Length: 195
Image 1 (cartoon, helix red, strand yellow):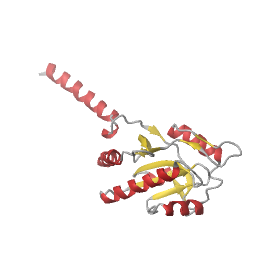
Image 2 (cartoon, helix red, strand yellow):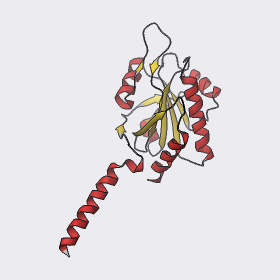
Image 3 (cartoon, one colour):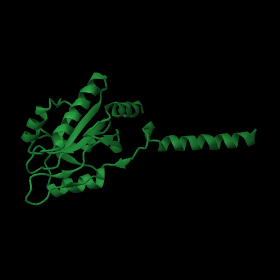
Image 4 (cartoon, helix red, strand yellow):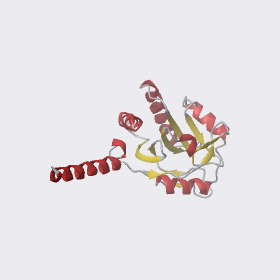
């Protein structure tokens, strides 16, 4: 009997380890930690990583004077926000980080979000930091480039949406520009919220 128990115990431990590494069932999970932050939202109120604890959230990087990718990205985020609401999913937040913070005041961010019918009750447009700070923050945490060339008004940046779990870890990222996989994102949100 003892001979049988040992292999069973070993199998059980392996299963536990694998389930712990599976990031709650989301395939190919990244598990990138996001450092603590406190930035200002479109109302000029502080929002921190701690404020988002306990919520699944979706994030992106945009700026209000963007002439190319940001308008379709923000329209796609608005579609995702509406679809999530239609699905009856609660306790989810959306966060758009400005990558042109010296131009993007809270007022400018609020005006920008309103153009896309953003529901500000759970969509936060963040600003209130320096240009170098957001460039470093994006690279260190989201592993994405943000760069504003000197004497230019356009900012170079990635176009992904990031899914973050209740502990503040980036679990997955998706295109936020063309053919956004809304159904896949919602499926992954539901997986995270079950745990």
